[in-house]
Length: 499
Image (cartoon, one colour):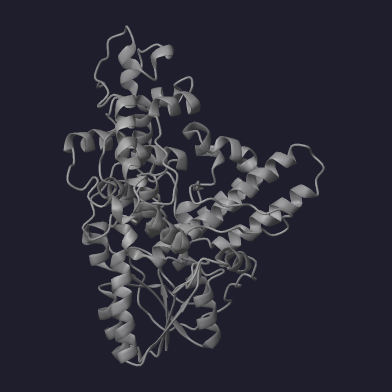
């Protein structure tokens, strides 16, 4: 008997582990709720809701093929111990998983147990991330090749191997608290396909110019990141469908199609970046909790302003655009990348809060929480990687650039409804008295300059460069040729925008 262990690959289409296992004989399709993982990871009700919707969809697809998805709630080793005795399993199939450090430790222990019990564990590459990578040289080319491989077709029929009823554990059993806000992005493959189609054929035309503002990004961005994180869609199928859309646009002489093609190509670059950043965590799992550049150790660890942290979390820092972004994120579970970068940057620089505390909080808000991207980006926006440009976002300038009329601010901060438009980004300067909205926690310019001074003092030291060079050799991006493109798209390690 073979087991297909579904994890972050909740689909039957373009699922290599599922297809190859089914080609060899009967399978047991399995998903495991591991209580310890939920308790020791920043996952919350948002993630549970999206996961439940995705598992419901997966189960429907499996039942159409003849077999119900089996759900277990226990540690993975205990589940496989039981299944070894009950089904005499000899092979377990899954994808190679790069997730948080808890998962890595579980996989290491499980691998030893499988080996001791003569059970083959076949793990396939899912998104171009390569395990035990020797060098980043040539990685981009390998990724490009993997994205252009033929997708794995769906299985047509399954042999029924279990009569167990499909039932997902209640959220309370996992120690989760109910939330009043409903998910802005719905889970399940069908919802993912709807988003992908509407993006490629309707919403993506102005993606490259509208992705930066939270007001326009909510429509123009694909919002596929959660579906990629949970694996209801594969990056390969998204990549190929996007290229197919480009070819269709090329065959149409409309002038506006040039803008559309540019936008979809910009989106394709971000699919590459998605995997590029996960590869960093695969190569160095300690990125989740340790500064990439060790000279930054001790920079923020010994001081933490709890008052600042609470105000930042609640969207009450006194900087309207920043607070509006935080409040929007808390309700929707999603916000565009530039605003994520601003939220993180402000916390790390202006408020001088350690990135580990703030990133763990943000992880509870992002439906698309992906550790490989999340923690590398948190460090990138906090200046601790050693290889990226120092970018300190001014929330006042960002507001004026991306919400000039203050419409987004007024939507999320009703306390400022009586403030004139000319003062909406700096209400503390208005002649109209503030009601129920705080003054700024810090002086923006002073806090920004002081933070930059501390960061550059380390960056300009003699010891800094040698270690930075080593970090770049291990994690830095290289050039990549995209399919059907005549020129190289040079990827810089200080750029990334999520979907």
